[in-house]
Image 1 (cartoon, rainbow, N blue to C red):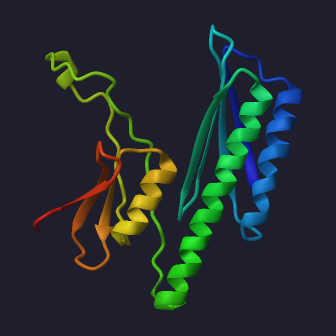
Image 2: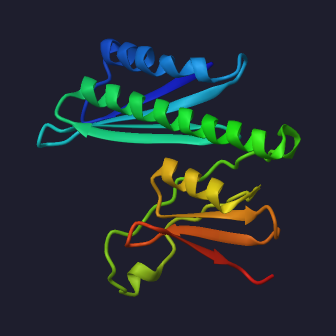
Length: 188
């Protein structure tokens, strides 16, 4: 069952907006097991150019769903984000079902929750830019590189840190400029 945390920036979250968000995102409940609890963090932003941005993050123990959309129409943005989240869930479930057929259900490993990593917008290297402004701790859980790429893509990040299920070492997958993927393995 999803619960909601709806916030607005430069917009008042009216009862009508809140009800529409909950109604649309409630469509996702059919994909969750009964009794499953998750909080949908919904951020609504309206910019000075009248563009409305909707960001939804649903952290769960085995997966973090995240999507964002910008559109002149707030309600259209909500619809587009919901559709994007639904595609992510279907893709993840297909991947899990395929893995269970290949390896057997007992060999499946829980997928980790991925933190929201921030990226720097510029490449300047002033002394002030070298200060750490945010620290996050990450619990690495075993998976293969394909599963890590799927997680990275679903989160919209450029890299993903994970524990390699075969070697038990820490690895990083990243998206290359040419659109393909790279893998960094550590020596331990």
